[in-house]
Structure formats: C-alpha cells, structure tokens
Length: 186
Image (tube, rainbow, N blue to C red; front, side, top):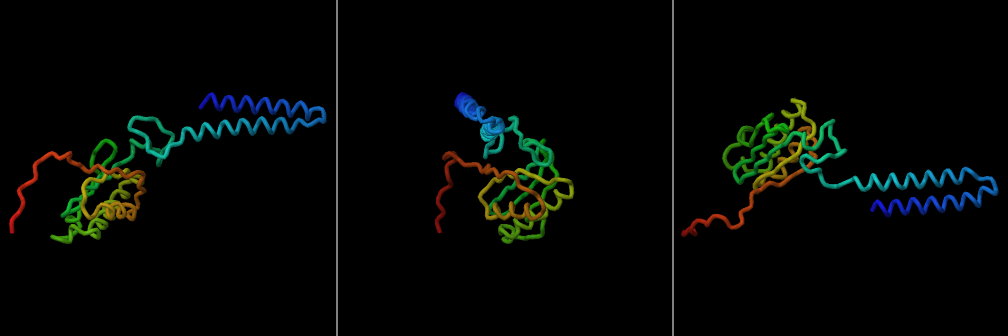
C-alpha cells in the first residue's frame, strides 16, 4: 500500500512538473503550488484512513482513540449477568475493583417480577446514576447469560447517564460438556 501511495505521489509530482513547465511560459506559479498541496493532502488523507478501525483496540494495543482522556483498556467495565430469575449489574474500574453493585432484588422486585426487563432496566438505571455520582462517564459493557434483562439493563445504564463505548457478549457456551439430567416424567 505504501508503494502504491509513493507511486501515486511521484506520478502526481511528475504531472505537476509538466503542467508547471507548460504554464511557466505563460507565468502561472499558483497552479504549480496548488497541485503540489493537493497531492500532499491526498497522501495525508490516505494515511489517516489506514489508521482508522471500526473495531475497538485489543488490550495493550496503542490507539489514538480516547474517551474522557482514558484509553480503551483504562475505561471502567459494567458487568451484566442476566439469568432467568434475576439480573445482576456491577460496575468496576479497569483494575477490577468494584464501584457499584446492584440487582433486581436489591431494587425491590420480588419473586417472578425480578426476571422481567422492567426490573433489569430499573437496576441498570440505579447502577448508572450511582456510577455517575462517583465520576464515571464512559463504560465498556460485558454481558453474560441469556436472561430476559440483557438489553434492558444496557438501556438502563444509558438512561442513568453512562455512555456505552462497547458491548461484549461473554456468555459461556458449552461444547456439549456435561450430560443432561434424565427427562422428567409427568
């Protein structure tokens, strides 16, 4: 790619010189300067496009992207565990120290109501407001589990004032590990 850019810039320089030689006879120096500047701008734009990525950087990888003055691996992490009966949300700093912890049960929902998306959104809203009170603005979200409160908890975090940078699904998937229990006879 670098060779192609160099070839383009060299050929653009040759074209500039030829046009400038023909124009110099008529006294046009401005055209030569503008063609050289446009070739330099083209090369700079190509370099900036090569460094851009739609994917977040890997841990330990340098990146020009920053959120609130922090790199991607320095951002706090919101862990969401969505089970079939409850949804737990914990916001930790980049080192793993807990900042905020809440669940649908601690928000006052009982029994079957803990497993609803409304309860998960309320827990996410509570966790988001508590985290913003502690100075957290940008978070990475790690979701684990297949419960009904997965998406609602993320919506609650954003409603609580947190800006979600990335969402990672960390649900454990067995590769046919354990033998299932015997079928229930009714």
